[in-house]
Image 1 (cartoon, helix red, strand yellow):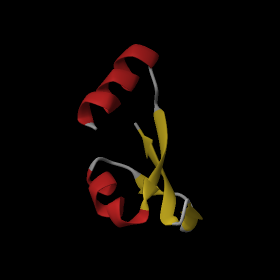
Image 2 (cartoon, rainbow, N blue to C red):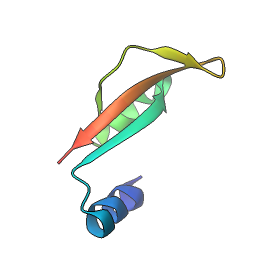
Image 3 (cartoon, rainbow, N blue to C red):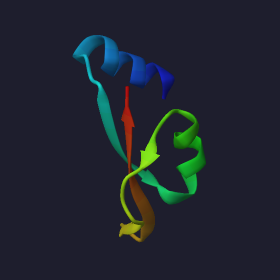
Image 4 (cartoon, one colour):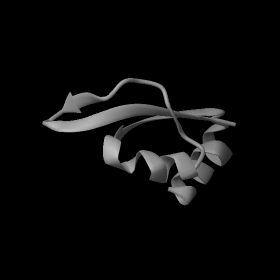
Length: 55
């Protein structure tokens, strides 16, 4: 994830990165600076949440 985040920031000057994460990985993505921006929802039978990282 660090490589992907750095790539987006360096090559596309991205200031905001939004992901759709499986809910159980909330803490992992949170440790990378992502914050939950949606309520949990089902996607293919698995709970997901939208998360946003802003620099």
